[in-house]
Amino acid sequence: MTEYWPVLSLAIVALTTALALAFSHLAARHWSDSGKKPRRLVAYTWGTVILWIAFSAWRLMNGDWFTPLGAAIIDVSGGLAVILSYREDKRTKAIRKAKMAEDADGTLKKS
Image (cartoon, rainbow, N blue to C red; front, side, top):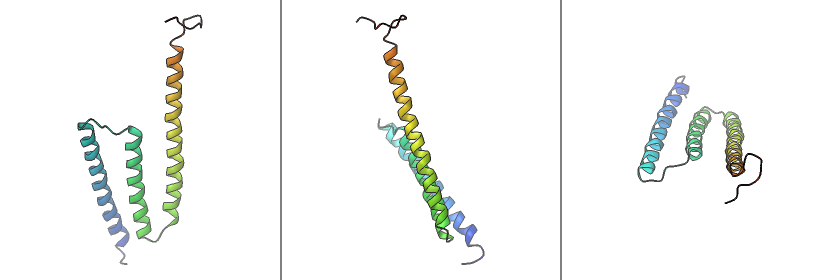
């Protein structure tokens, strides 16, 4: 490898990442035009995976395997936190919706 390899490999990965993210953005726009809009969580996950693959490829091209492993562990733990937060938001919304059926004194409204 030459002394320019770290910079050249970074440029290659950056260009590939930009193209992958642009393609995924266009694909998401195409899905939404056809009526099948991807959910936000899916879009966030897709973007994060693309960025992790790009970063990992760059580090692996430069002989580092431990940093991509650490980034994967951080990404997965963060992703699980987001998924659990979405679940909690859904549960809270359902509880609030159910409570709206109660009268001010706490008794259930009669249908």
